[in-house]
Image (cartoon, rainbow, N blue to C red; front, side, top):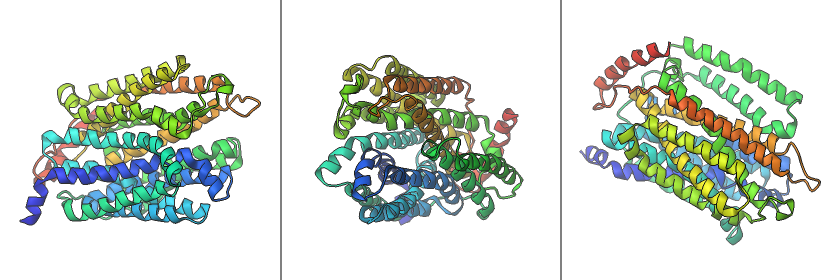
Length: 486
């Protein structure tokens, strides 16, 4: 009886989930602005310190869909506790790391926490009243973008007042509290996918993701024509179709290719790829643009802390848009919200490309981007969650989040090459480098908006009382969208 009472209080569950998502999203961005500080503190070089970001990227990309799928099979609550515990352990190790390579290992452990997001969506779908699902998914999805912005805002003040170690102590405390609260308050999953975990396809998925993302993230420093980078791209090109074939032929696939072919799922995933290229690239290059010295003729010469504060309105706009996205989706539909979000991204990026001479202009343009990020994140998540059977919520939302990450890595690599294509004698990029880079993101955002227009809205008939009937409904729901896909 105690368990039934606990299950009814979905608001407590939501609070725990929000703390977990916020902790993970903070760790995505807080480290970026202080890499030079870490480089000096741990007596390493620029090429080595970038592995602090790369290890986290690779680990999160591999574990996000896998933990989402394992949660669908063995229980979302227990996997949520596991993912949060990994975040806490990784943060503790990072806070006390005596060398750069210990810090790199710690960041890889933190990446396991990427599973928090798909598990959150799955638990919301399992536990919340039907009319509360869209709003809760929208808010938690927006928190991922909000955390990215907050990380940029607080990184400078935390390091100035304390030290870079506190960039890990703070998330460690948050995730430890969230892990304990999840074990105590979050009810066990009522929906399970039968069968064992397909280890072989999990290895193939991990292999092609690592090969692709390692090549993309290190290509700029290793050289795009180097043997290592070309070899990794070739390996990814071979491993990706091998993985798809293996999953398609498997009786117990890790990622069900039929689910990935649902029209709503694959079109939203394409939007996620394009959208990720713009959003994550903005997080990486806008602070750099603001911090460029005024002697260049276009930079503003602000500090790390000041650049973060200038982006605070963007973060606030993302949160507001995420909170209200559920109401907007209920009235106009998640597809319309996604189209508006992607369109606003294109307009905000176009503004940055054409007009960036005054700080107030950049604040207005980035605030528009913040609204866009909150709306689009929420809408993408809701569309995917609604389109798949309840037993596949974790893996479907995990792959969508993962594809955004892949898009971010690709966008960051492209933007780095474009921005640094022409350099001044003092080593700073020329203004045209940033202008052309932002122009590339205008194109990707416009393409995302165009694809969003053609996203079909299909709802899987799985929003019923958990139990055998839910599985039956899930089975009935799958053929319709598959036929449309062909």
